[in-house]
Length: 196
Image (tube, rainbow, N blue to C red):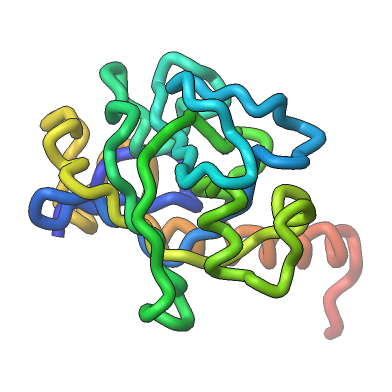
């Protein structure tokens, strides 16, 4: 399988046929009634309660999204269709156009995408529309339809191949977790005498 190089260990992207596929990532909502959003998008689409769209971290020239493996110098174009599928129920899905760049993967490294509130409501209909932007978090699979055409060939590596950014995907997460355990053990036990 072919993987796209990136420095964000939370977002692992693969080229599958003509598409880019990102599995089991956290998605949030933005736009309508969002205290951190004025409703403007980089595509020019005005975000509101009825808008069907999404934001992905696609721009390499913006610091907030540069670590993403799908942030390219020539970004995936606005309007590209993106399929979001519920990880726990693959029958729940939406296909929406890409309308904005985000989320900020430096500030929120485990957030891989933002949905406008209308498509987010498909995944969590129990949350009122005017509360989704502040309460919605959901595990999804993402498929950027036709996205492989926009991936620079120099960024594609075979899965498992060392791309200079450390171990890929789940291996990197496991290594990070293991190093955290070792670090906590060391901090709790440094200077203590070992039993004889």
